[in-house]
Image 1 (spheres, one colour):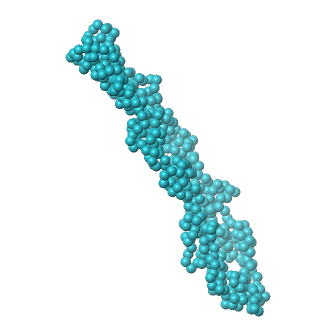
Image 2 (cartoon, helix red, strand yellow; image 1 turned 135 degrees about the horizontal axis):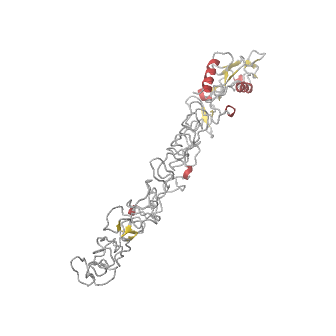
Image 3 (cartoon, helix red, strand yellow; image 1 turned 90 degrees about the horizontal axis):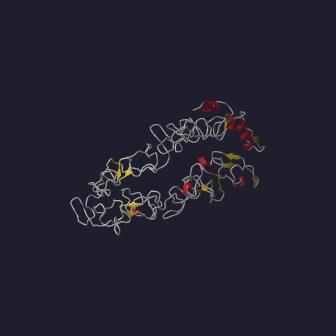
Length: 458
């Protein structure tokens, strides 16, 4: 509790022992002169005539302002004041009655994930009051790089480590391939270069030999096909030999049977063959990539769940692979939703659409009293025996009486405490209202208002 709040509470306690203290609506300010104005009638009846206006002015003039009294007092340097029970260093209004801001060193729950109170943007807490993380575009402790994107095909991987040959990702403009292994007998050899005849490595399933030279009449010709491949006779070491130089049939010119992944498109069998096993490019297992194949094509699709793609409500992926199906919060009223205000969905009072998209937020007329917003709502907020009713604007009022000579009214101005009292008079000549005890009807004089019995005496 700050010093001003303590001073206010001590002042309130001291005032209880002094004559004439009058507490304002908050109970924190006090005023008074030690007496209240009153007038007495010449007939012996007495009626209080204390002016509400003068009492209010007195209360205001003697109030002692402090942080925590629920009133924003700019003259005291306050930016906000939700009261001592609600001011919090983890909320919108701090214990010092300042509005929570990023950089004040206080973590505002639900708004900030951190707040170190400095302007250093590359430490563990950024200047946006968010915890530093890989992908935020800033090189944080423990990171070698951070380019802030989701591409693994540039110089910085999504792990915030620099790209390198063997990481399994083809770095654009630098590598021809990258299969993430150190084998030299597949389609990608050391140095992340595409395998080719003459590189000195025998590509398994594609080449019969590879001596890495340009001598055509040695044991390995420049075709890397081996001796006698292409003579139409399958010899030891050959899988096939069709005697032609067609690379799109079932037998490659290297006398190896055509297979998916040999980088040769076999006519009538394959849609494509890019010689790799990457399922996120345009060729998937030698079939042209398409929405519904279960693989997300980079740069073309947002999602792909194969046969599970659906345009149904709450589907993770639509039939066209462009993103999720309709959902609460997309700003469109779909499926079981009664409403959808997108980012404005809220469970706050008066919201046009709640967070579940099932209807509006709390409002006057929904039958549920919302504390702080309504005095009542329908029957909610009405107490038995209080003789109150709920108006259309969700405020309390006294109900109408059904008994002759009786009228319900809030005689003591405390409808929230005990509701409305009845004005049952000893003699109807005294009038029907709570304090109207000066009427002269039928030559009878009303003596005064009985606070205990709630009626006028004759």
